[in-house]
Length: 118
Image 1 (tube, rainbow, N blue to C red):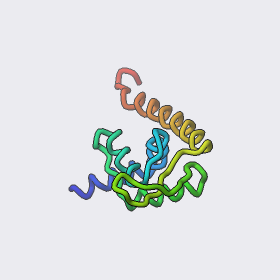
Image 2: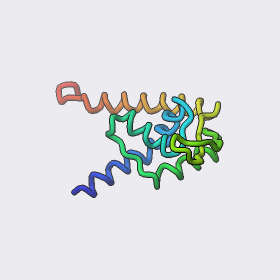
Image 3: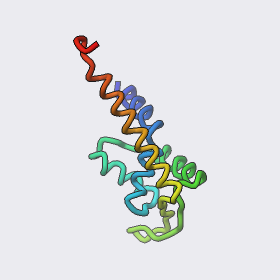
Image 4: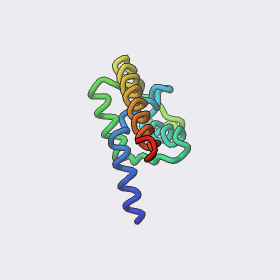
């Protein structure tokens, strides 16, 4: 039963992980693990991103030009790659946010439908 719940969560995140990463990085430069923690914090600890999903997504977004990285030092004095949003990433975030909000509104309308309204 618990495995089914985890699979549902993964299905949801596959379609939204890039958007969540772009939003997290838009709030300020972060190292990879910091991105993971920021998403968890912003979700009220409701979303748990697996590192095995996060790092390929960061690589993909960097390769696509949505984020850029540079090496720096983390809070615990370790060398870490810090990610920041690029101009293309800001544009993508704005476009995807608009699409997400539109789709959420459409789905919300459908879910609010009642037999009397059909």
